[in-house]
Length: 180
Image 1 (cartoon, rainbow, N blue to C red):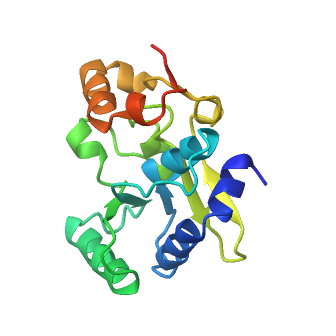
Image 2 (spheres, one colour):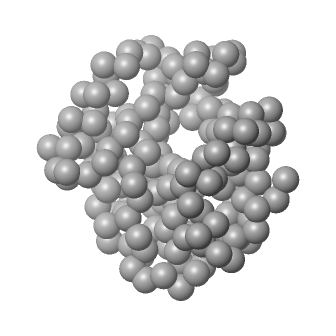
């Protein structure tokens, strides 16, 4: 089991959230971004228990039903299962539109077009209760406490810089190196 999967598997709150999302039966799904990044960085900084993420980014890919309304229905279903949590469900089959890109092929392809190397990592709870890590850009930066813009993020450098500052990552995780 990878270190990322082990960190998530040992977190009872994370596992409860993954079990809830799995009940939706979404195609090509995972919980990504701060759900993974924050827990791994907290673990590597010795912060126990891990701080809860500001939002829970559930992503999936369904080109056959790219309606925004369906995302709200999924959020409502998750809120019925685990009320009061900051669920954000997004179908990656429609995320290319606001970025003026060709349609993504799948969830992993969509994650390549996120701003930071450490954000495009997700975890899915499989039917056999095993954890799959989805990391189209790899996990080295996350595990080695490095953050840098993705190739896409380099084309939107000001957005990347603003996001890093707004999220206060330098303050929250002082061991992280921010690279160009």
